[in-house]
Length: 267
Image (tube, rainbow, N blue to C red; front, side):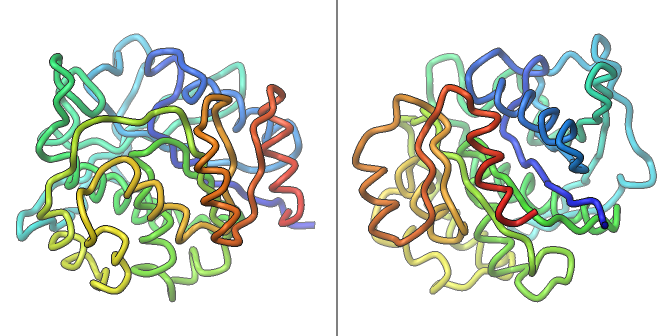
């Protein structure tokens, strides 16, 4: 029997990022999948907070070098990797010196969101998907975790909808307790259209401020199912997901088995 495959697209992973419930899920859930006999690939952005020397990150030359065009500008895609020896796993890091060298994930010391968060999301999403094609690795399931991964379901279902690497994969999005107060650059819509996304695809972003709520709704729209990744999720989101008709899995403290119980139907 062919080994099943899960792609984990994460915003942050412990210990490369601070320890939170979300970063812990992204560290422990892939290991649990491996223990269940599943093959995994794991990605996160190479934020400046990652201690590359301590965790022995190194560039993968055969995967690096592709230029991604965003808003008519070329941005070099650099792929790095680190090994988690105890878990027999590797973590791939999407890097670009313009987008990910600052010592923070998505906001400055005063809590203001970075002006280029829109481009950073596009670059990260496209970087993961293009790297997967270079690896020639076809996932059965794609798990997106963290608001910075909220574009992935959209890109997989629209920009890459006919791509044989992704067209049959089931996409799940985890809603976490990672709400933010800042807004995302309004030119975001135009940059998405330049990335093979149509105005119709992003109608949820055109009705008002582009914020955490809008991005979460967009991710839900293009996912096959939604998993509650935090016990503190507002009840309105449970109601919203149910109204969309999407498969919804509520939070459980045994998060590894809770997530995996959703996957089993497709493995």
